[in-house]
Image 1: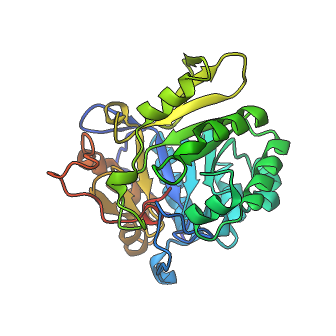
Image 2: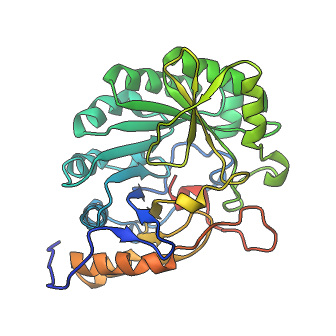
Length: 339
């Protein structure tokens, strides 16, 4: 695919209409996954046809356009990014993008025993690994098909590579795993990795439960932890929305991602690109731009892509309204949204 350039002056940073600088994109490389987690997708999923999915070259061009507009952090997501055929060829190229400070990955961990070493060699700085239970039977209930031992082996493989940071992600749900807050935390502390607790979000009809009855506030999770640990607010920040606390005497940090109880919209610095090329300006709204159409109609014109991205900043809404019955909730599933 050839890339043409125009003489139009383009900005070197992305600023939305609320004055927020967007310097971080979450880039989905697939809607497919080897798990079927109850908060993410349905058990019997229908995935996108191949011709609707961005090619690896198209994904690279999207990443290049964003980095030339001042984005310096890219997180690869899915579905499960490591099930995409030949994904390492893309990751190797992304790791060499000029201006990119951090290349990040979110994964379910089941493929890390094979991929941890090449990911580190390609320049991936940090990895987030989803793990919602340390009980094998319960883990399979939540993931529907996942094997806990594969994820634990993947975590150990990643630890052996010396990434800048590893973080576990746990979605805490009433009646599923709300009694494992301490167990998961103790495991993270033992392995000297971070852990973030995430409130379940109302994205699509994926669950075998009523989300409003299972959503668990991070205020409650934090209360459980403070009965056992001294949590010290951390001044450290990362590309994402986690609010971190240090455990006295431990290397690990405990984070809270609370889009429901404490939305982090005021300082949102992120956008998402789905694997079908839809630029989502907000996780909890449907404001979007079709980048796939521009890629394919403009035959790789990078500046046309960049102009569309710049114009999209005016569409980025001020905030989302999760679980607010006066506002329409997103119907797309999390695997379609991009991790």
